[in-house]
Image (cartoon, rainbow, N blue to C red):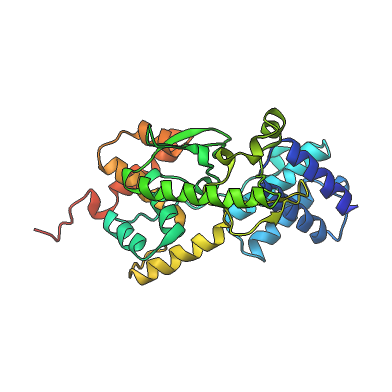
Length: 317
C-alpha cells in the first residue's frame, strides 16, 4: 500500500516539475508519517493524525521549526494532490520559526576564508559571495548561463521557479574560462565513450531533443564520475554534490580562525549586507537575491542596525 501511494506521489511531483531533491524529501516525510501511525492508510487519517506526527517531531525528535514545516508541506501535498482530500487549514498551523538575524562576515573575514580554499571550492565560494547565489543555484549553473560579454550569471529556476541575473565578478573571469575549457574536454571524453547526455527538465528535453548532448547545457561544475539517473535510467554526469563544499567551508573557516558559524549561505548573507553598506538600494538587492517580497530582504537592514554598526556605545568617548 505504502509503496503504491509513494510511487503515485513521485509521479505527480515529477509532472509538476518539482526538483529531485524535493521529491526525495517529500517522499521520505510521507513514509515516516505512515510508519509513525503503524502503516495505516493516509486516506483513513486526517488532521488529528497529522497534528500528532508534528507534535512527535517537535517534542520527541526536537526538530527545528523549519523542519517541522517541511514535513507539514509534504503531508499536505499528499492529501491535496494525491488523495484529493482537503485538510482544513484551521485544524493545523505551521510552527513559528524563531526570528534570528543571519550571520554576516566582514569582507576581510570572507577573504581570509577564501584564501584557505583552492580549486573548484575556491571558485564556487567566490561565486557565492561575488554573485550572491544560493549553494544549489551555483551547483546547477550550466555553461550557457555564464555571459562574459555582459558579465552576468543567469540563475535558472531559482527559488520560486524564477530566472534572474547576478553580477559576474571581473576577478574570476579567467578562472571561469579555464573551468569551461575543462568541462569541454570532459564532455568530449563522455561523447567518445557513448555518453555525454545531461539532465534537462522534461519540457526542455521535449522541445530541444538534442540539447542534452550539447556543451552549452552541461553543468559548469560537473561531478568527477557519471552516475545512473534514477528517473530516466540513463547514465549521465550530474553536478557536484553539495556536501563537499559545505565541509570545505567549515574547515576553511576554522583554519582562518573565524569563530562564527559559517556555511555557504553565510556568503550570500554577506553579499547582501555589503551591497547595502556600499549604498545600493533595497530594491536592487532584492532583485539580485531573487526575493519575492522585499520584507525578506529587509532582514539585512536589521543586520546593519544592530549593535555598534549603528549606535555608538556610551562607554566609548
